[in-house]
Image 1: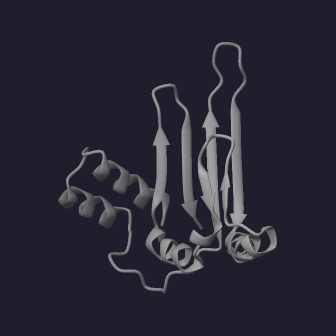
Image 2: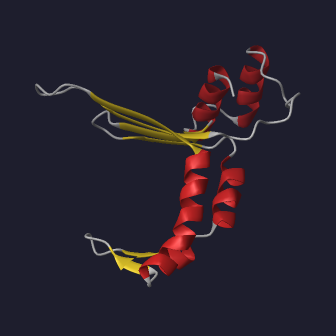
Length: 135
């Protein structure tokens, strides 16, 4: 998805333009109405966190790109952990419970298909920004 297309879609999501106006804008920037080529399967999950500089503190930026093959491998490895350790449930320091028997690679693959062009983009009033997307 081009940056222009993404901006137009963000304007629609924010209610700044109507769907009809968005169609005109997309036509003006030359965005195709239907994709000509098949979509590529995502290979990475990118996580970007930006915390701008303020009050004498310097800006902090994190940019992580994790290959999906690593995540898939971790899910397969997680299937062996209960048999090696003799139990499947573990209590984390924050009180949350992690159950390795509930890890299902099929759920992960279904989530990836649903993500497609989804971009999770969170901004707050202080200028902090978190973006998560597949690429």
